[in-house]
Length: 149
Image: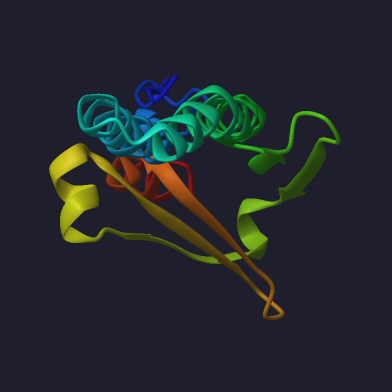
């Protein structure tokens, strides 16, 4: 899911969202799971019920939202231009010729550097821009753009 493919040989380069998109759901699950364990041992029935409701409702919802986001966002760079698809339920497809692209930049926080993820910002001539958070190997995307341009 979080791989960059086709970076060499002049073919199209295709990238998807990094696996770290699922971290918020995992963090919520771990924290509320720990709270549920504590509440069960302490006999705090109300807190235990609340924690179990969060585990049963919010965590699956966060996972589904992350899965839809991950499945619905793809960036493809080729000799014809940049093509971006966002959304799965209501997909939006955008494209721009390489001559219309002013810059492609990668930005990474410390945590993103550790995980191998990052943000890709695509600026088009005329002032429009696309910002793609949580992309896998953003430097490879920038290098792929430079290779095709």
